[in-house]
Length: 278
Image 1: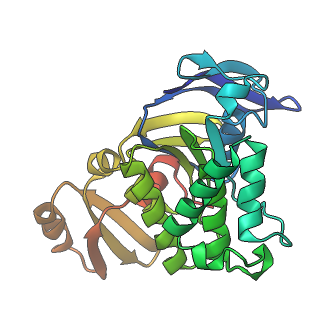
Image 2: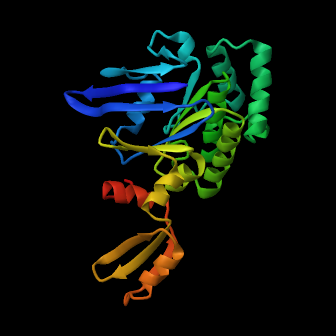
Image 3: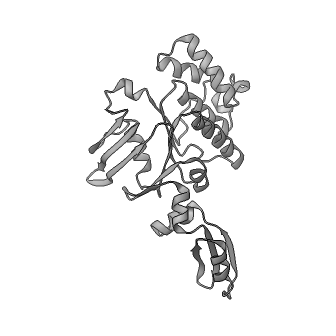
């Protein structure tokens, strides 16, 4: 569906992306993980044509995307990490404006608006102005707005940033439900649990370079499915094992306090990059 070929981006003689290559299949939930400044959002902006590549190509359904590719661009929508909703407009007005922007016929856009607002639990709030909505409701509205033109690909750039745990999980349920129905997503996030739960495959990005692409569970298994956290005088020391028996055997010889737990995606990230998520 989407193909990234030797993608590169340079700002003021500084490379922020270098030779990025990956494919996203139709119906896939693909994740981009990396520290701040790794290049994740730059990739999203290049796919959406908000930025132009310094080199390389981006293809959707075999056709190269450019700012002049009107039909191709209409197949892609973005949910940004920043709120991009006018506070003085109502929920219904936001959806109506989006529908007109995409030239969706009146009856069709109103039917779709009702369906989407109902799906996201916003129908009873349709007459409220954006400034009256909670953060979680605003995020849901941004998702509804992005889905109105029935895109083939939805770009999610940290879609749950700033949400409380309950609202974040509501968004996860909505997004994963849409993915099960066949919608394709590309996600950037700093929440490791979010990426591990939602994504079929994940690309690790560091300083503009692609380190690895694999399913999250495959990354975890490669590191070791059981972690032992040891509280030493110098700090927390972590060791990883392929099964609980090996972990218990290791822990039995420890003099320091320790914890046994399941390995997670953040462990993989720290091990690969030598640091945590900013």
